[in-house]
Structures are given as C-alpha cells and as structure tokens.
Image 1 (cartoon, one colour):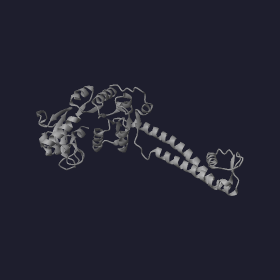
Image 2 (image 1 turned 45 degrees about the vertical axis):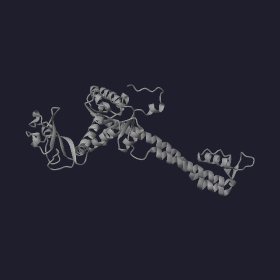
Image 3 (image 1 turned 90 degrees about the vertical axis):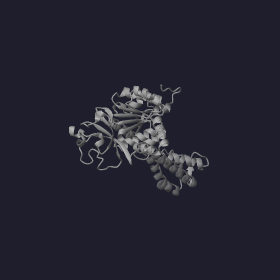
Image 4 (image 1 turned 90 degrees about the horizontal axis):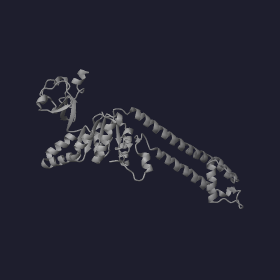
Length: 369
C-alpha cells in the first residue's frame, strides 16, 4: 500500500531516511546545554555583583544617576558582550578594581563559551558528516535488518553470536524507540519507512549481502520485499510473516526464505503443552550459547565417503548442490566433497564435535581452494 500523508509533516520529512550512527561518546547536545547553563550562570553572577555594588556605578542617562536592577542587567549584558555603550560606568575605585579583576575574567569566560559552543556545533556536524561518508564507503556485502522489534533484535543477536561484525549490520526502522535501542547495541540506523526505496537505498540495500525483514505487518513485508528485490536482485532475503496464508505471497514477492512467526510460536506452545520436555528441547535448540545448538558446517576431509549417521555430529540434513536432503534420503547415503551439513551439537566446543579449523581439521572446501 502506498505511503500517503494527507498533510505534509515537515519534521518527519527532514528525518525520514536519515542515517544515524551510534554515538561514540556523550551527546553533543549535552555539552551544548552545559555550556549554555554556564553562560547563564556567568551572566547572573555579573548582574548580582553589579547590583550589590550599584552605589559605585553611575547611570549617565538618568537624572538621578542611580543604578537599579534593570540597569544592572543591562550593564552586565553589554559588558559581557563587549558592546560597552558607556552610559553606565563604575566611578568608585573599588568598583573599577572589581571590573578589572572580576568582571573582565567573566567577560573572557563568557566569550570563550559562546565561541566554543559555535565551534562545537560546527565540529560535531563535520565529524558526523565525515563518519557517515566513511560508513557509506565501507557498506558492502553487509546485512540490512528491517524492523528492530523483538524479532529483529533476536535476529541481530544471533548474527553477532555467530561472528557477524556489528559494523556490518544496518537497521531500518521509523521508530525513535528502535533508534535508541539499536544505538545502545552499537548499530547504525536508517530512520524511515522500509516500503520507500529511498530509505532502502540509504541503508545500502543495492550492495547488501542479506536483507532480513521483520516488520509488524504482512502487507508492509510484501512491499518491502518487492522494493528490496528490485534494488538488489542477488541479495538473500529472509522475511517473517504473521499469517501462514501470506507465505506464498511473500515468496512470490522475492523472499528466499519465509518464516511464519505466529505458527512457529503456536507450534512451540502446542509442543510444550503436549510434552514439556519436548518443548524445552526445542527451545534449547533455538537458543544460543548453552545446551544444544543447530549449525551448518562444511564437510571435513576425513568424513568424505561416510554415511551421515556415522559422523560424531548428529546430522539433520545434507546440503548438496543447493538442495537440502534429509539425513535419511537415499541420495545422500554417501557424503561427497562439497557437501554441507546441518547438525545438532553441544553449544560448547568438544573434541568429538569438530568444527572446521578448531582442531586442525581441513574441510573439503579448504582442500579445493
């Protein structure tokens, strides 16, 4: 469905599609606010100093030559800003000394704060533009995650746990809440609607290796998938849908893999109700870092010619020439070079559950290289 605003929202238009990189230190606005408060503090201190010592000042524009609170505010303002009209001036010796040794340093501090604030704004903008420019140049073969809700965060966590660099992940989400959460996780964010091609271009979808779509609505998922596929026909697209009826539609839109989130949760609940033990095992398989894990690995050289059941890992499937075969399929009775295995094994490394490269083993892929 098209993205329509009956009344243009200027603020939204300015922020839509903007790249936001995670802050490397405290927000510049925090520094600016602190400096502003310091400047106001200097002004207030100067006003109080002049007002308390008002008897040592003369207002040449007033018949009585008296200085009141308003005159103190006026004098402090023009003095700190170095304007100095001269209509109000100290005439007492001690007032002149106070101006020389107290007000003058306050004036210098006030000017330094103003100039420093301006330079900070310009420097911050320049640094941010440079960071974004450098980030764009390095964005190639990265992963774009559309939607940073529960599913998106879980997907990112799984990628990071399996060795994907945080700098190689870009999040697309219009929510300010998602922006903050993604920045806390050290992720770059493009704020905007993923059904708009310009937003996807800013996220580097034309050069992305993978795109993960986890929007809250299936119609948005279909539109996002269509736009992603048009921008990058070769990227691998994984999409999550709420309703099983929409799986085929999302596949036809260009998704390589479609996960039905509602059905998956429903099946987990059903298994847990029928057999709490089975539900616990399934949850263990889907979790990372402890217990059991599902993984895909290369076939090792010493495993060539064996049956899947003879390997130390519990083989679930064999990937041969891009086709997935279940371990009991007659077509994969004997493993050959180039096969990849989908296995269940302990989450912690064990000698009898070898992973390529961890114990000096060579995979068939390494041997071919």
